Length: 224
Image (cartoon, rainbow, N blue to C red):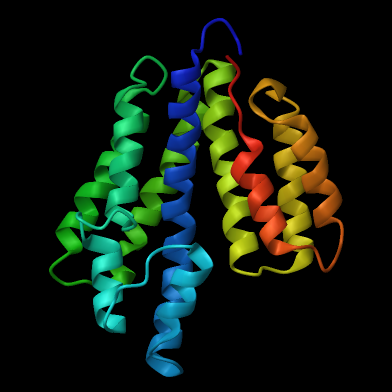
């Protein structure tokens, strides 16, 4: 680990990236599942929860769409994910500029304002804010190591969710390649043996999904 970044800060940076990207990707998936629940299968949210690995205690699709997005008491909800991101960013004020942090706060505020109407389409603004967050990371985080660690979380979360939701194999290979290239920049925060195993496993068209997810779960490391 570089001298300027403690293990604690490395964890905060990594999970900040994961939480922000989780909300961004899941919002896209939610719109797709919402359409399926309306047009084809009202209970499609059960599959969504299973793939994401979260507790499925929703009584209906309407309850799912509302509580999973807006319920602050639900640790899996999108507003909880953004709150976790905000908590991590608060501890990183030397690394995260106020302008960059503001996009997370704007996202939380917008979700809170949309809670009464519960309109998934209105949350496109959150997606836009989170895209702006990543643009600001690139433009406003001048120190290489903190920027790389936030983006390490982003890239790993991307791959994790694409595996969980059965994206095409060529898309998985693309994301593995992107993660591998990023890992070359910050080798100290990745288990290099597991990174090799990840690449080997995902090269197989019928790769073991559960094995890949387990590798991803343990891939990020901080040393002593």
